Length: 257
Image (cartoon, rainbow, N blue to C red; front, side, top):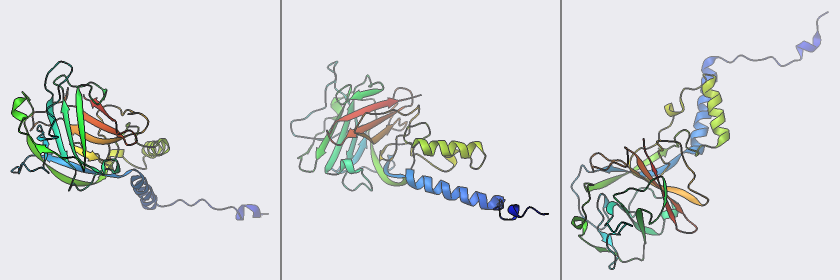
């Protein structure tokens, strides 16, 4: 006599490989939507500068308050003008920078190592919309080895965290590992990209493993080693700047090979 109970059991369906592939790609797209951020990326040089009060620069700062000068480091030396970013007109800025109009960054010749507070071998000045700024031609007073170049902005519509950055939620990271181990997907970087140059917003493109800037801090700015501008951060490294939107404080992390 036949076992009628077996006739009522759900039958396992062996889906064709192409259907399985489609489902996995749908899941990858869902994960990407959870992770994706926008950013403004910057390209060094390649065009004639205007020297206007809305122009972005690597290796030069000429916007100051009337009573300001290039900051001095703990050794009594003038810091190197590193970056000038005018936020007005950029295709994207993080919410924590809305209400600000200009950021200027300086760094000591003895570059800060690892995690450093504002003023510890580097300085960021964040100017609000109501601040009155003037143009000061004081770049040549410094002995900076960084070559000044204007920066052209571009919208980065999709920026993703690098692996082992700490920016991928643990449950998603575990799922991706399982999918890779089973051969259901290829490498994480086949589906994502993290902009490696100078940028505002998006994710830090860590060279080593990522770090925790501290409670309340959010990544804002990446400054990359730049061959054209003769900028070598320790050993082809990057600076990452994070801001605490509650206190207004900034921290810098230096990462290199």
